[in-house]
Image 1 (cartoon, rainbow, N blue to C red):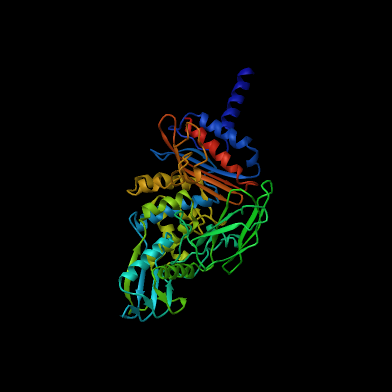
Image 2: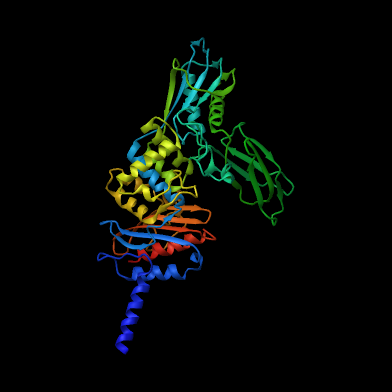
Length: 488
């Protein structure tokens, strides 16, 4: 009787250890990985009523060593960018760069350009005010002191659809939901294309108006400052909001004396005209006046080129794109793939290219729903096993070092190294040893990448947590899972 009881208990323990939909093979790490991960998933209160999909592979063999609902389609959030980056590197190449060209359709007579000036964007999301200054300098060097005509922005390299299909309306004024255009500008070297940076500082004493600084400084955006400086022990409560379909930003609320500045990045309305306005400001800085108006339009066939600006190569652009999880970069890369392969810079054609590329990495697009390149859509659905398969397959690509270098590194404080993982997993077995892409949208948290274990092995993991009441609690769960893997 005791022998039978022992056998029954052994069977129960084995069943509990392996759990639902878990695959283990002969090359697995010690079985305690399975036991520890199952204990965590079953006992974690934040996962009650939620859905988790987890896939762990050997980076050497690609064999799955832990699979918890790994074939269940789940929202990936910004883990979608892992697919977009891989496809873009494959299609465009790591040395690919975006050009911005300046044309004119008129002659230069006695330092006067008799005609219109055109700036044609080809998708560069990294244009800064300093780049427009350099363009203006080159125009001046060609002897132009006055432009007797209009200033046109040409964004026809892409279509005129500004927002991805499922972008929430509430994201429209946020920098991470900024309009996508082939001609745009960024405020800082984080390259949040199509946005301005607003900084609110308290006045010297209570009752003073706070000071507001906008980067880049431009009259394209109007600031209405209704905020007030309050006493040092007052409550800091500042709102910075742009009016729908306008470029009026209203600042309201209170900021205490000596409080830290409040910073916000705000997406502008019509980034094409925003970029042209910055060019006009740069021309004025060089003493070049424009008699006409700022408009949008396409470069005539008869126009001649005055100057060209080239962006950094894709290998370098991947760093702010992936480290800082830049949605705009993802959508631009999708449209650029569509433009390069099919001659149409649209989401439809770009996603068609993306799906084709995924086949080359051994993925099955038939198991997925892909609606954008950034993962902001709540309609995107990808199984964790497909993400871990991608991370295994890309290791053989010649551009893999650029891809790996672009992933956030756990616990490293430098923003352009640690990225969105710079404050996480700072323990001795994870600090600098986890390179992974984070993801967050409402009710969703995700983390997929590579971890070097205590015994020197590299494991690939994909963690997708959906239907959470508080997605912020998913970060702690992800960190616990990866720490368990790192301790092997």
